[in-house]
Length: 265
Image (cartoon, rainbow, N blue to C red; front, top):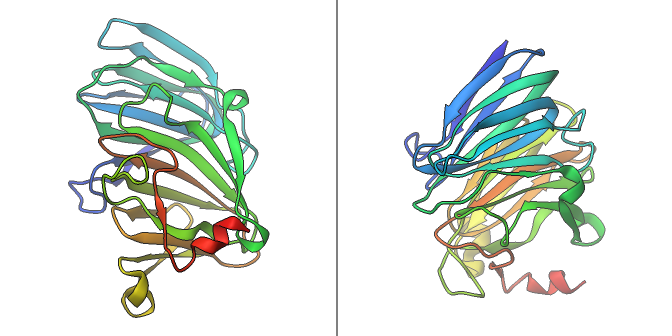
């Protein structure tokens, strides 16, 4: 069975800029065709192996295969594929089950189809103690993308993530850029969950904070405000993420001044 779903979009009202799709193949030989239209796409392959081929606006033919080298999202860095606007393409399952998410963001700029293999993905070990995690930066500031940066974060069981609370809400480069962030959560057991928190004013955070429970296969969309993620103990959490906006700048965010000292530990 091939299953394609739209998980978040501005039209649905659960995101403001980017769209997120989920695609699942159950076995070899299944395929799915798409066109990026006036948007760029980034494919993050969670499991299985696939072939991605097509033609871009500039008549660049591409054939990426095999794409995907993991049994699941917890098994190291991802393979990612970037596709520019006005690109038609087909995804074929070479080894299933195969699961991926597809991020989409509107753009009026051209670029080039690109495969980023897991061996080329850079990472940073962020945080410390019980807020440490590994951040894989697949398509960052210097990548061919024009509107998005995409990667994954892998957190040990119980460790807080995306911490200290921070925001990327206002265009004040280079210190801060207005960027929407979409998270897609995967737990090593289906019943795992996390709490996502968002608030605007550090001085009234305890009284005004909005909290959301996020389970396996669910999203956490942040279009503004300081935010963080608190997973429940004993469950491994890995999440795919995309930052999208008019400009790109990895690290262009501001920590909550009440908790900024934590970043120095």
